[in-house]
Image (cartoon, rainbow, N blue to C red):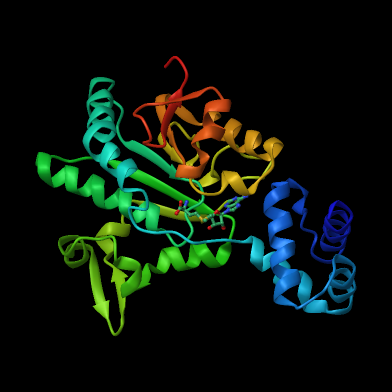
Length: 276
Ligand SMILES: C[S@@+](CC[C@H](N)C(=O)[O-])C[C@H]1O[C@@H](n2cnc3c(N)ncnc32)[C@H](O)[C@@H]1O
């Protein structure tokens, strides 16, 4: 498998200028096995010949690596802790420090579900407290297609399964079989393309200076190797406001503990720099 993986890595770099060596070894191996089975190849050697002879296989292989699955309020415990502990704490701290707005970065936003979920929560805090809450969410992804979809804010009804009827009615407009996010929920979200492997910027250029109270980096770390994960975590650490939080997916909790972050509430997937 090591030889096949190295050969595929080389071929993909030549044909697509995409370097898959930054992905986690197990993830790449599983993807290769899936492609071998899908194409009914009987050995690694046979798959390599198939890969070389079929011009489309490179693109299809890459497609199988780009996983964009997401959900509104994907991890209910994370969002409950955010709603009840973290956001009230940030609001209090920012008003004491006279910080003008809550700044959030959804660093792999897929079709925007995570950013829209947070915008719903913050708007709900705004109405519950009967006062203005200034917030801005920078939502980025390296896939242009995902960012375009996020900006459009159009979802099939099945994608709204985690939402209460109240939220669906308040924040979506039904159009045919789809639901469209209302403009007032989009108002404070800035969607843009940003690749976390970018060497020139540690935070999305649209945000100008980072200073984020929350960085969401959920369900993408585990696709990458340790070196690339560290680069992503360094970026997140660099652009966090003092006392800010990083949020990951459930399977990434162990990874965070290795990078000097502590979980603020057990199993919440919400982390703070150790000692802050
Ligand atoms: C599985 S989805 C997770 C979406 C969302 N964060 C969640 O937890 O539901 C992973 C997303 O990460 C994006 N992604 C992967 N690598 C990236 C990178 N290097 N820079 C920016 N986005 C990336 C993918 O395009 C995809 O939309």
